[in-house]
Image 1: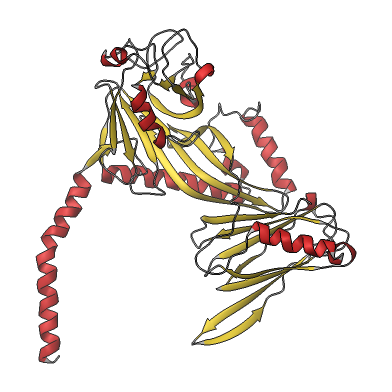
Image 2: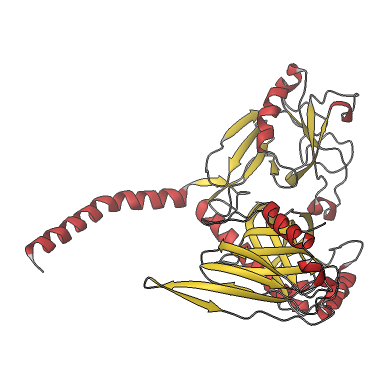
Length: 452
């Protein structure tokens, strides 16, 4: 080692030793810092706001899962009687994790009491409340015209009430069926280290539940559901039989979870995520919310419900040249007018679609049998400055594809041109592209719909 290299080496050691105390202090502070124990998604997943009510101090806090401190705070008044709500008319505010279902305003609000300008309805009783035999309804987060009403603690019939101007400011954080509100008597705080341990455990349960579903391991899949679970008027036994029929019908099942958020309260947890379900017969994209309760050696799903998510209306991913739905439809209709599609097999090109190392999954839907549909991906790979073209043959689908859906084809590459050839007897109705990154999270869903 020459003298110059030696001096650089000594300088790096000096810088490291100088910074080490600060790094250790930051690490220790992160481990010792405490946050509300419901925030299991702390520094995890997409940014999401959560409302936290503390009845003992008559405060409502707004937290982000990327901030250990509240980003906003409001004064509220809650139920006249102490304790969690148990039954109709007990004048108590429930405690637990809830979601906002609807917004009421104007003539939709009852005139018998002061509900202010608008109200957000809560899903009380939630699945855990119902399992524990709790009763009642009509629990809302709402405003009040009478400012004096807010200044009196414990002054509602069970709702969480705040000033109108505060509710307007709070509204920007609330999204129906997405924004959770956790109501405590007194907030319980937990170290970030313990928060992460609990979250990792729940993520493990979620991954195993997903894997059992994809592998058609029915016993393992159903084993994650509570004995009292019901779905669409089916009890657990009927639900298992229903899933068994689907497993026999589908050749493959793929479930991709993204935008995962997790919340906790006492002995139960709530997972919320976007779910892409793909099979050879069907596919759909929705937001799913699951209530898990700790039972014996693991957590089990007490209930789950989904909200269908629409696909985005424009292909925008990374950098490159994009094709919009309007452009695709215009090109398709032009070919329709020239009879090139209705008379003979035709080709539809998506050109210069940049996916940058992602996986593309394609689905076709037609009004007739897909007797000869072939997907031909052309990969352009760059290596040492040279450009090499490589063509991969896709799948040729047999006549009578169930419900007009094709199988999926996956490919990796930097730039991809997709060519579709279809039989003249089947009119193409839609093309859906699922862009999936290497962590199996859905980055974009693009649907090209031809409804002419």
